[in-house]
Image: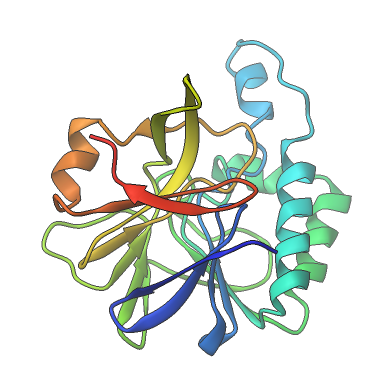
Length: 220
């Protein structure tokens, strides 16, 4: 598996092509914004019908990453379910799939703005979690240091071989690390948006996801 190795607050980390974060020393895999059950939301709201495969695609990706990394602990950084109702409406097969992934692993659901309460699936729940030099939460907070968060679904827009492309990306500087959305069918916020420019230092990097993750200066 192609990965991008980097150090954040003295923790040696790997950015995976999928948008997952691997901390080998802790045998930990971190993912953010799975938004399981998202395809059902436009239908419930009277919107367009999406193919109902987002949950299976996301869980397949997670299954592969867990197998490849050998992670024994997982932190989901919030918005793991598109809503509390979406979590409750997963099919029996999907629920059993998550249960199988949890077997033999420490599993922590961080609360997000889409899923603020506990869900009826195994694992522990917390608003945030501290491990070594790092604090894991859903939304970045001003003045934080050693913070790993999600929520914004960052995406970088750049020119490659004469054409414009957009890639989901990690954002990192000395103080904070923001993960891309891991779930299928998730949108994103461009790194040029004022919110992300305000959060990240001038020397921040974007680590592009894809077949070969790579770090570039954060596009502004």
